[in-house]
Length: 425
Ligand SMILES: Cc1ncc(COP(=O)(O)O)c(C=O)c1O
Image 1: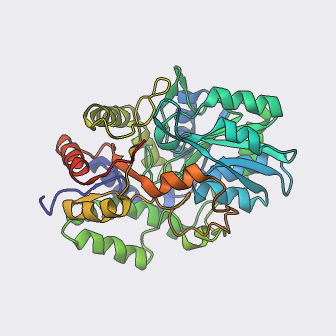
Image 2: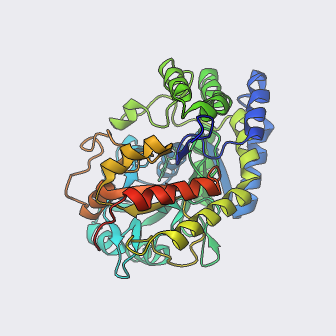
């Protein structure tokens, strides 16, 4: 392993390319275009042309977009929002900020066909519906389509709003139809390790005219984030062009730690959010500066997803039979990360670092990511979603992102074959 090779990881700016860094460098010296500007509307239009919603409305993160959607539904205090466990706190928090109640639904886990399914279990969903239930959020985990038709049916039966969380699934189709177009509303993330990245950013989309207009009104009433916050996000692709090639030698890792410590770099999730509190920089409008980066990435969406598809195929073809594979339900195209279950998660997480492979992507250990999230503040009761908890304690996610080379795939595979102890099915 050369110390100048990029680390193999699911996080650490996996979508960053040279042109993204150059663009950020150009924009960072033009603070007068950072906040309001024409690129916001241009990006919203390109995005909406792709999905054909009534409207696509941009925000400064996926969680802000979800907050806007929840705010635009006629939801009262103490209404219940159903959401799967094995999720991220940035999905739970907007529910709490709204003073509504998250109700956790278990995931399918290992399904009847012996495949691993990290999505919401429709059977458990139906059991958890009460007279206070108002909406279901469906997370298409790691780009794997949830059982969306069945969930649509359930929402119809109980008169619930259906919101799709497409943070992991931009550009994925289910039976030929784009994910995000099945629900009453959907939201997307352009976070640093998502399908496309502008460090932070998000979009809400809806084909329901009334709902779309309420979300748009909510957005118009928001402010832009501060100049400092925008600077932090623009600085990310710039400094990462230095962090990535030097990460394995230790210097890049130090730079990351240092710039986060002095707050010139933001973190994907703040300490307050792990405690269920709302930081003052959410929700805000998507600033012009970041839409410029997001548009550049959006134009590479097909290329990125093709790479993910090839990498996903590699694991499907080469992982030995004793691993439980993710289900191939529907026309699954790719996985944002390729999950496997192992008996020795802790050992894999630490041993892999010696080989320049970093599995520490925060999607492990806890049913609500990242580890360290205060579960009681999230209103999650341990033992309430056993499959999600079990999966969290055994999961390792193999990288499929566009930065992963053929050589990297071989290294990951060889490492897994050598060290991983697959769970008994
Ligand atoms: C499944 C899922 N949903 C929603 C979000 C929120 O997106 P964002 O980071 O843009 O707020 C994330 C990521 O943080 C996520 O992983």
